Image 1 (cartoon, rainbow, N blue to C red):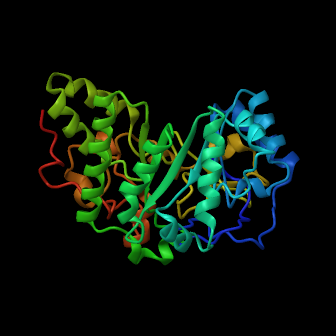
Image 2: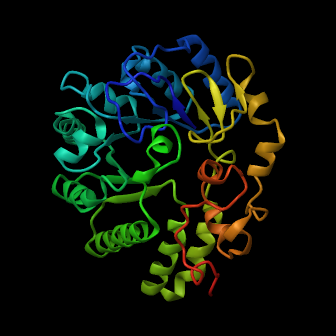
Length: 350
């Protein structure tokens, strides 16, 4: 689960899917949150990503995270890092199983994109503080026309400081990301970026560098990865393909859900439809109701339209983002308009 515990934030990022701001007030109480955590545990939730807004603006954040851990739920923190200090860093890394801090390019790019001069230096300082502890930390980077020139720079940061993970997100069409849609990459730029990321992945593997690379919000990347993997290990292609099918591609409403700061539950954080509210219903009732979730849980989603209807790789990507499809076409079950696979790549060639 991804839980936006607050919509309050000390930055004003151009791509923020929740349109966070500093003047927001928290709606959910500590006790309401704890009650829902117990309901989530009873319904099989294994992990919660603490997101926002900036999660560290909530004074009860550590209490909530400790409650999760007491109940066997793994916790991850997604932060801008501006509230990390030498005084609280040990508590942060001891509380969360993983800490991700956003860096969206070099200093000038990051500060512009995040809406605050000096933000880059503070975020980098936060990552280095966390990394010094030996905890699992990572850089989070969002690819847009404004940031893509810094992709190599961010990899250089990871290599220079031995950061164990880099998470690279494609733009999602929600909140300010939808308002600023013109900043999304075109398909050529997207493909070039994915090729660069895969170059890095195989380079790290060859050199024995223990750096984890994850891309997000574009499950079609897995199809390109498979073809690249097959070039290196042709005898293992079908085995890897089956692993990717088992992974399942887009997991909105299947293995993933989102709760926002108002208690609204969605299949993922970017989804246009609300399926319930934890202040009005038990979590289990929400999670097990409705034809929307039933349809999202079909794997693969063979009933999608457009290029997805004929795609032989849909059992890997599962049709990509339903939120992007709806944002552009008004049809939840249309093709993901950001899919950059060629016609040849959409064929399952053994």
